Image 1 (cartoon, helix red, strand yellow):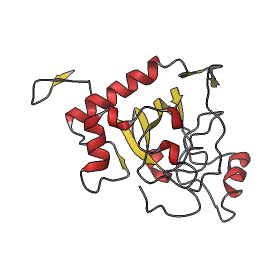
Image 2 (image 1 turned 135 degrees about the vertical axis):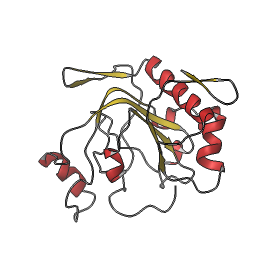
Image 3 (image 1 turned 120 degrees about the horizontal axis):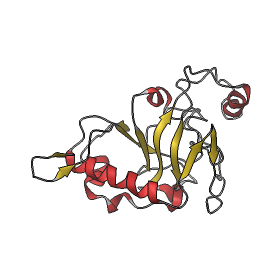
Length: 201
């Protein structure tokens, strides 16, 4: 750990991708793969050690429950070598967007994963992150570099919270070990991320 300008301890360097979501369903409930509906596109190919997905201020209709909540955490990504996906994955997206021609980024799995969706903690529990993502003018939908130390500290606290969650699934021998204690249900609507360019963040 290193000391910040105010004397507080800052966690060791770890690249954390944090982004705003407008719906659930990607990562998917059963396999926990990030990009199963091609959400965030090429952003999935960025270099990162963990991902934190948070609900935006203006979710899609039917997904209001994720508004300004921490919805999922993935730690230690497992990325295939290419963006090529199996026929089943392509067909899944084509059901939403018949014009779909291929994944823009790789479909990513994680060594550790927890999906909270509507049951996630409020982002406001982490005031520095809340201010950074919602109150400081126009912040990019996804960010991972040059984050303030106070935000980095809170992101690490979220990762620790996820790792200690009873529903945190561990990747073992190429298969996801799903928790029997999970209370999450299937999405009420099909994600629309491949249908249009989102303007509401």
